[in-house]
Length: 319
Image 1 (spheres, rainbow, N blue to C red):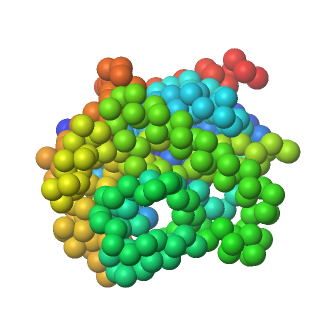
Image 2 (cartoon, rainbow, N blue to C red; image 1 turned 90 degrees about the vertical axis):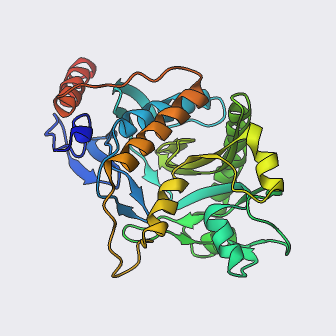
């Protein structure tokens, strides 16, 4: 094992009391315990719907703690699935039946939206975009550009009208999650502004538990969101430079520079130590910027065992 990987959680394989199912996602290991889910945030990192060649130290801890921070900060807007975080890498909450769409909301022309626009497309998920926009330009108002949730392979852009017509989400439910999406984004923008950041775009996922519609998964993390540094944005934009950002986009750009976009026959490049360290540092930087608190690295040499013990103790006490 590389020395950088010593403090990484690359995978787990627990046998928890009452466990009825296990699912390995791109970055999370998900255990089902009846009507509860246990999500272990590993240090795996994905881009273009592929898991990259090496884990990122402390990434899982950062994502899990940030997700809990934002979920707890938005409960007044929408109920969510989270109930407990018994370990920095673990979240436990209500099992939901997910709506099979991601509610992507954008306030700037960047990333996937820019790549589509640059190719000449002016209709994005049913939203008409005007000619003459520049990369990184702010929209007049945020736009929602949903994507279907794929079991395997790439998520696909889809419009609100197609979602409802195809019965993916009922019209009445879509109206609710659309309103939640705008309200959550407004809160996220304000929380970012308070820390001299710009929340550029993000995505939300929702599910149903009994008769309740809940916010699920993670929100406003660097895996699900893009941030610009507010102090630099305007001058960077005016001079045609890409704004300084805190997100996973730079990982995608590094992969594209090395000839990989997740397409068939493309070979994923190996990530050198210097790049792994830079990714970790960027995740830590965002955590500290967005929370205003120092990040305390969990540098245990037995992380996976510590996670298991924390879970067993928690489950013993709640049963």
